[in-house]
Length: 143
Image (tube, rainbow, N blue to C red):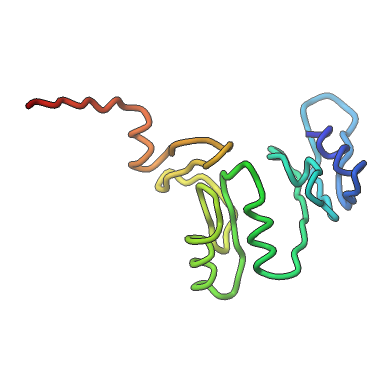
């Protein structure tokens, strides 16, 4: 992950918090915030599995949705809005991800199906949908 952060900074992202591996033993990466993140940077194009926030700006709602969907991945998405009805509509019909949360962060909940689309995976885990990932369905056809 540190290489992704360093390459993003080298390509123009600005690190406003963290971004440096602390001295000492252990596997630890500090909370990091990158601004001025653009397409072509790992902080934009890659899945960053760690405490790195990529701040990507958009001029309006249309551009924000297009940016959110501009990825080969699709695990989860979140929209924060005062207009719950509009947020639900955007989550249901416009955000391309396996999970879409309105006014909350993407998280796993055993009551809800969880999983991605595209290069973020196939199928679901958790909830009653998830159990079907672990069973074989047998077809018997008689004529």
